[in-house]
Amino acid sequence: MVGQGVLRECLLDPGVELVVSVGRRSTGQRDDKLRELVLDDLTDLSGVEERLHGFDACFFTLGVSSAGMSEAEYRRVTYDLTLAVGATLARLNPGLTFVYVSGAGTDSTERGRSMWARVKGATENGLTRLPFKAVYLFRPGLIRPMHGIRSKTRLYRVIYAVLWPFLPLIGVLAPNFLTTTENVGRAMLRLARDGGPNGILGAREINALASA
Image 1: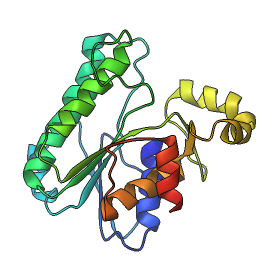
Image 2 (image 1 turned 120 degrees about the vertical axis):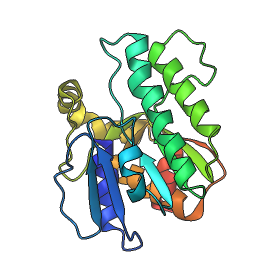
Image 3 (image 1 turned 120 degrees about the horizontal axis):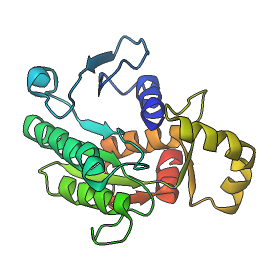
Image 4 (image 1 turned 180 degrees about the vertical axis):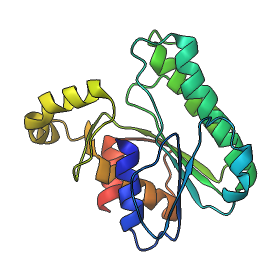
C-alpha cells in the first residue's frame, strides 16, 4: 500500500527522471520513466546489478505483517532481506539516500518484549551502519491510503474499511499519529532532494515535510 503511494508521487514529480521498481510482482503501472525488475528472490540482486547504478535514492517500502510468524521467519523477511538489498545498493551507489518505512513503536534497543519492534529496530540500526549518504527512518502510525490505493493484505483492508469513516476525526484529534500515502511519498522526495537533520521521522515530521 505504501509502495503504491510512493510510486505514484515519484511518477507525478517532474523532477524525477527515472524510477526503477524492484519487487516480486509487477506494479501494474505504465509510465515512460518507470522500469520494473520482477524477481523471485529479492535478497539476491546480483543478476540485475548493472541496472541499479547511478541512483540518488532508494525508497524501501517492502514489508510484511508479523502476525502468525515466528521471530526467525519475520527476521528473515524483514532484517535479512532489507540489509541484503541495502548492502548491494550502498556498494553500487555510494552517494545514495536510503529511506526506510519502519513503524511507530519500533524498538531501537532491540531488547523489548515486542518481537516485531525488536526486529524492526535491528533493521534500522543495521541500515544506519551502511555507508550511505544519508539514512532516514519513517515511523508513521496510521497511514491513510489515497487516490484509490488499497492494501494487498486482507487483514489491513478489513481494518481500513472499519476505520475509514473515523479517519478524518483521527486526523483532527491525533494529527501526530496519522499521515497519508501521498504525504509519505512527498516527504521521501523532499528528503532525497534537500536532506534533513532528523534520521527518525514520525507522522508529524512526515506531514511537515510533505507540506513544506
